[in-house]
Image (tube, rainbow, N blue to C red):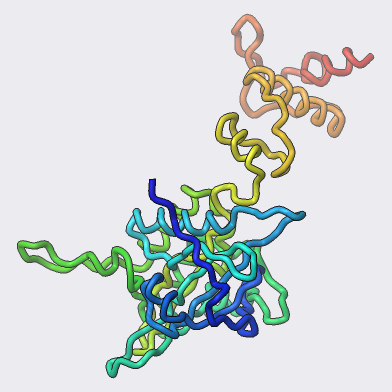
Length: 323
């Protein structure tokens, strides 16, 4: 079994004074040295991002391996994703990710494209849309951040500019058939939907409007950015025992560290739920309202719509039990 390498950055020429302001995790940019560039498959002095693996009450989460595995799975699906490799810096776990904005100029010089995040794009379409601010205030649960608004934003910009497919992945392998024919152009929306399907597969819970975007190419065109930042996936924040319990016993709405409560049989769950609904209905309204659909008597005959719930309904039975 082959293992993913963990790169040691202790001897690398890193500069923690070049922080990356976006996001909630500590991170910084540095330039790749000769040795690291060869290992990562990038050019010397290319920009590389280092993201620290967060500590939670003295223990590491699984953010580093979650990002690495998610990137590998995206590649297997043919989805363009930011390159991710495991690394250590200053004794702490993390990941390195070369900038996906690196471009080659016609003269061979290094240049970089610009990334516009999803919230900025959506505000161009809707001036009232809330965007993240440089003072640290972020908006992560926006009701207008919907699939429809996202697809509309990447379909065509307000000035009429079309957003192209990402520069890597299926976008560059969809050439014409060997026997000739018309080249098929895959729209950016195809990949965006692919990102969301990847999220569902790996249980990514962090696809907020800052974790997708559009790239402004040096040539002036627009392309969809590759998918990135999958640290909140694959149950990375759960304890190992909790992950194992969920894989074998199902998922419950408990805390990430507490053990799952004993599971009830389906009949027990249904009976308990119906009892709670009944008590709530009787205490809030006193009498259950007539249903629009006629009820059936125990013998099977259909009752009239004037059947009295006060005399024979479930609330009356409940009141008799309590008395």
